[in-house]
Image (tube, rainbow, N blue to C red; front, side, top):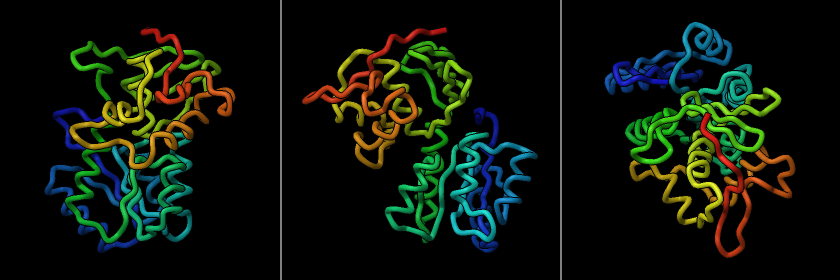
Length: 242
Protein backbone atom coordinates (compact mmCIF):
# COMPACT_ATOMS: atom_id res chain seq x y z
CA UNK A 1 0.00 0.00 0.00
CA UNK A 2 0.87 3.69 0.06
CA UNK A 3 4.34 4.63 1.28
CA UNK A 4 5.01 7.90 3.09
CA UNK A 5 6.98 9.34 0.16
CA UNK A 6 4.31 8.50 -2.42
CA UNK A 7 1.15 10.33 -3.36
CA UNK A 8 -1.76 7.95 -2.69
CA UNK A 9 -3.35 6.74 -5.92
CA UNK A 10 -7.13 6.97 -6.31
CA UNK A 11 -9.41 5.68 -9.06
CA UNK A 12 -12.75 7.46 -9.59
CA UNK A 13 -15.31 5.28 -11.40
CA UNK A 14 -18.43 7.26 -12.34
CA UNK A 15 -20.35 7.89 -15.56
CA UNK A 16 -20.91 11.57 -14.63
CA UNK A 17 -18.05 13.39 -16.38
CA UNK A 18 -18.53 16.71 -14.56
CA UNK A 19 -18.54 14.99 -11.18
CA UNK A 20 -15.37 13.06 -12.04
CA UNK A 21 -13.51 16.15 -13.19
CA UNK A 22 -14.57 18.29 -10.21
CA UNK A 23 -13.68 15.56 -7.75
CA UNK A 24 -10.36 14.86 -9.49
CA UNK A 25 -9.42 18.53 -9.30
CA UNK A 26 -10.30 18.70 -5.59
CA UNK A 27 -8.44 15.52 -4.65
CA UNK A 28 -5.40 16.43 -6.73
CA UNK A 29 -5.11 19.69 -4.81
CA UNK A 30 -5.37 17.65 -1.60
CA UNK A 31 -2.30 15.61 -2.59
CA UNK A 32 -3.61 12.54 -4.43
CA UNK A 33 -2.81 11.06 -7.83
CA UNK A 34 -6.21 10.55 -9.45
CA UNK A 35 -7.26 8.42 -12.41
CA UNK A 36 -10.76 8.48 -13.94
CA UNK A 37 -12.94 5.80 -15.49
CA UNK A 38 -16.42 6.32 -16.94
CA UNK A 39 -17.63 2.73 -16.50
CA UNK A 40 -16.66 -0.72 -15.25
CA UNK A 41 -14.85 -1.67 -18.45
CA UNK A 42 -12.68 1.45 -18.31
CA UNK A 43 -12.06 0.78 -14.62
CA UNK A 44 -10.78 -2.70 -15.38
CA UNK A 45 -8.39 -1.30 -17.96
CA UNK A 46 -7.14 1.28 -15.46
CA UNK A 47 -6.68 -1.42 -12.82
CA UNK A 48 -4.69 -3.54 -15.26
CA UNK A 49 -2.36 -0.60 -15.96
CA UNK A 50 -1.74 0.35 -12.32
CA UNK A 51 -3.39 -0.75 -9.08
CA UNK A 52 -4.72 2.20 -7.05
CA UNK A 53 -4.64 2.47 -3.27
CA UNK A 54 -8.38 3.14 -3.17
CA UNK A 55 -11.39 3.16 -5.51
CA UNK A 56 -14.27 5.67 -5.41
CA UNK A 57 -17.06 3.73 -7.09
CA UNK A 58 -20.50 4.76 -8.31
CA UNK A 59 -23.26 2.14 -8.26
CA UNK A 60 -25.57 3.17 -11.10
CA UNK A 61 -23.61 3.08 -14.37
CA UNK A 62 -24.42 1.91 -17.90
CA UNK A 63 -23.48 -1.72 -18.47
CA UNK A 64 -21.90 -3.45 -15.48
CA UNK A 65 -22.90 -1.66 -12.29
CA UNK A 66 -20.71 -0.81 -9.32
CA UNK A 67 -22.04 -3.62 -7.12
CA UNK A 68 -20.99 -6.22 -9.71
CA UNK A 69 -17.55 -4.65 -10.16
CA UNK A 70 -16.95 -4.44 -6.40
CA UNK A 71 -18.01 -8.05 -5.88
CA UNK A 72 -15.67 -9.20 -8.65
CA UNK A 73 -12.73 -7.25 -7.25
CA UNK A 74 -13.37 -8.53 -3.72
CA UNK A 75 -12.89 -12.08 -5.03
CA UNK A 76 -9.86 -11.52 -7.26
CA UNK A 77 -8.04 -8.30 -6.32
CA UNK A 78 -9.17 -6.80 -2.99
CA UNK A 79 -8.69 -3.02 -3.10
CA UNK A 80 -10.10 -0.59 -0.51
CA UNK A 81 -13.33 0.77 -1.98
CA UNK A 82 -15.78 3.54 -1.10
CA UNK A 83 -19.15 3.59 -2.82
CA UNK A 84 -20.18 7.13 -3.79
CA UNK A 85 -23.76 6.83 -4.93
CA UNK A 86 -27.04 8.74 -5.30
CA UNK A 87 -28.78 5.66 -3.90
CA UNK A 88 -29.14 6.42 -0.20
CA UNK A 89 -31.56 3.72 1.00
CA UNK A 90 -30.34 1.61 3.91
CA UNK A 91 -30.67 -1.58 1.85
CA UNK A 92 -28.37 -0.16 -0.86
CA UNK A 93 -25.81 0.80 1.76
CA UNK A 94 -25.98 -2.61 3.43
CA UNK A 95 -25.63 -4.46 0.12
CA UNK A 96 -22.68 -2.25 -0.84
CA UNK A 97 -20.86 -3.04 2.40
CA UNK A 98 -21.67 -6.74 2.24
CA UNK A 99 -20.18 -7.19 -1.25
CA UNK A 100 -16.84 -5.87 -0.01
CA UNK A 101 -16.87 -2.06 0.11
CA UNK A 102 -15.17 -0.38 3.06
CA UNK A 103 -17.46 2.66 3.24
CA UNK A 104 -20.51 4.21 1.57
CA UNK A 105 -21.08 7.92 0.90
CA UNK A 106 -24.37 9.24 -0.47
CA UNK A 107 -24.63 11.95 -3.12
CA UNK A 108 -24.76 14.87 -2.80
CA UNK A 109 -21.83 14.88 -0.38
CA UNK A 110 -19.57 17.39 1.29
CA UNK A 111 -16.12 17.04 -0.36
CA UNK A 112 -14.43 17.49 3.01
CA UNK A 113 -16.44 14.61 4.46
CA UNK A 114 -15.51 12.41 1.51
CA UNK A 115 -11.86 13.38 1.96
CA UNK A 116 -12.04 12.44 5.65
CA UNK A 117 -13.52 9.06 4.78
CA UNK A 118 -10.82 8.45 2.16
CA UNK A 119 -8.13 9.16 4.74
CA UNK A 120 -9.83 6.93 7.29
CA UNK A 121 -10.13 3.94 4.92
CA UNK A 122 -6.51 4.34 3.77
CA UNK A 123 -5.30 4.44 7.39
CA UNK A 124 -7.16 1.24 8.17
CA UNK A 125 -6.00 -0.46 4.98
CA UNK A 126 -2.31 0.19 5.64
CA UNK A 127 -2.58 -1.58 8.99
CA UNK A 128 0.18 -1.36 11.58
CA UNK A 129 1.36 -3.24 14.63
CA UNK A 130 -1.22 -5.09 16.64
CA UNK A 131 -0.26 -3.37 19.85
CA UNK A 132 1.20 0.07 20.32
CA UNK A 133 4.97 -0.10 20.56
CA UNK A 134 5.04 -3.72 19.41
CA UNK A 135 7.34 -4.88 16.66
CA UNK A 136 5.41 -5.52 13.47
CA UNK A 137 5.18 -9.18 12.52
CA UNK A 138 3.78 -9.89 9.08
CA UNK A 139 2.30 -13.37 9.48
CA UNK A 140 -0.05 -14.66 12.16
CA UNK A 141 -1.41 -18.21 12.27
CA UNK A 142 -4.57 -19.29 14.07
CA UNK A 143 -6.79 -22.33 13.67
CA UNK A 144 -6.85 -23.03 9.88
CA UNK A 145 -5.91 -19.48 8.89
CA UNK A 146 -2.84 -17.32 8.19
CA UNK A 147 -3.13 -13.52 8.19
CA UNK A 148 -0.54 -11.54 6.21
CA UNK A 149 -0.68 -8.25 8.11
CA UNK A 150 1.31 -6.23 5.59
CA UNK A 151 -0.82 -7.31 2.62
CA UNK A 152 -4.11 -7.56 4.53
CA UNK A 153 -4.60 -11.08 3.20
CA UNK A 154 -6.31 -13.93 5.01
CA UNK A 155 -5.53 -17.40 3.63
CA UNK A 156 -7.20 -20.68 4.57
CA UNK A 157 -5.15 -23.85 4.96
CA UNK A 158 -6.45 -25.10 1.59
CA UNK A 159 -5.00 -22.03 -0.13
CA UNK A 160 -8.28 -20.10 -0.52
CA UNK A 161 -7.78 -16.34 -0.17
CA UNK A 162 -10.51 -14.54 1.78
CA UNK A 163 -10.98 -10.83 1.15
CA UNK A 164 -11.26 -8.59 4.21
CA UNK A 165 -12.96 -5.23 4.43
CA UNK A 166 -11.18 -2.57 6.48
CA UNK A 167 -13.69 -3.23 9.27
CA UNK A 168 -12.99 -6.97 9.32
CA UNK A 169 -9.23 -6.43 9.13
CA UNK A 170 -9.28 -4.08 12.13
CA UNK A 171 -11.55 -6.43 14.08
CA UNK A 172 -9.28 -9.39 13.38
CA UNK A 173 -6.22 -7.44 14.56
CA UNK A 174 -8.00 -6.68 17.83
CA UNK A 175 -8.85 -10.35 18.38
CA UNK A 176 -5.39 -11.63 17.39
CA UNK A 177 -3.73 -9.31 19.87
CA UNK A 178 -6.06 -10.44 22.69
CA UNK A 179 -6.81 -14.17 22.30
CA UNK A 180 -8.87 -15.89 24.99
CA UNK A 181 -9.77 -12.57 26.60
CA UNK A 182 -13.41 -11.57 27.00
CA UNK A 183 -14.05 -8.21 25.31
CA UNK A 184 -17.23 -6.26 25.89
CA UNK A 185 -18.98 -4.61 22.97
CA UNK A 186 -17.93 -1.19 24.25
CA UNK A 187 -14.32 -2.37 24.54
CA UNK A 188 -14.38 -3.68 20.97
CA UNK A 189 -15.66 -0.32 19.76
CA UNK A 190 -12.93 1.45 21.71
CA UNK A 191 -10.16 -0.79 20.36
CA UNK A 192 -11.31 -0.50 16.76
CA UNK A 193 -11.26 3.29 16.73
CA UNK A 194 -8.45 4.86 14.72
CA UNK A 195 -7.52 8.43 15.62
CA UNK A 196 -10.92 9.01 17.19
CA UNK A 197 -12.95 7.47 14.35
CA UNK A 198 -15.11 4.38 14.78
CA UNK A 199 -14.57 1.54 12.33
CA UNK A 200 -18.04 0.15 13.00
CA UNK A 201 -20.92 2.17 11.63
CA UNK A 202 -23.42 -0.45 12.71
CA UNK A 203 -23.73 -2.76 15.70
CA UNK A 204 -20.83 -4.92 16.80
CA UNK A 205 -23.16 -7.95 16.80
CA UNK A 206 -24.00 -7.51 13.10
CA UNK A 207 -20.35 -7.09 12.11
CA UNK A 208 -19.28 -10.18 14.04
CA UNK A 209 -22.16 -12.23 12.65
CA UNK A 210 -21.03 -11.48 9.09
CA UNK A 211 -17.37 -12.08 9.94
CA UNK A 212 -18.21 -15.47 11.41
CA UNK A 213 -19.60 -16.52 8.02
CA UNK A 214 -16.09 -16.08 6.62
CA UNK A 215 -14.07 -17.60 9.48
CA UNK A 216 -16.13 -20.36 11.05
CA UNK A 217 -16.69 -23.87 9.73
CA UNK A 218 -20.24 -23.65 11.13
CA UNK A 219 -21.24 -20.01 11.75
CA UNK A 220 -24.28 -21.22 13.73
CA UNK A 221 -21.91 -22.98 16.15
CA UNK A 222 -18.92 -20.61 16.27
CA UNK A 223 -15.72 -21.96 17.74
CA UNK A 224 -13.35 -19.04 17.06
CA UNK A 225 -15.39 -15.93 17.93
CA UNK A 226 -17.41 -17.11 20.91
CA UNK A 227 -20.24 -15.21 22.53
CA UNK A 228 -19.86 -14.77 26.27
CA UNK A 229 -23.33 -14.09 27.58
CA UNK A 230 -23.42 -10.94 29.65
CA UNK A 231 -19.79 -10.26 28.78
CA UNK A 232 -19.27 -9.79 25.07
CA UNK A 233 -17.02 -11.86 22.78
CA UNK A 234 -13.87 -13.96 23.10
CA UNK A 235 -11.45 -15.06 20.38
CA UNK A 236 -10.91 -18.69 21.38
CA UNK A 237 -7.86 -19.66 19.36
CA UNK A 238 -4.13 -20.13 19.82
CA UNK A 239 -2.29 -17.40 17.90
CA UNK A 240 1.22 -17.98 16.58
CA UNK A 241 3.60 -15.52 14.93
CA UNK A 242 5.38 -17.02 11.95
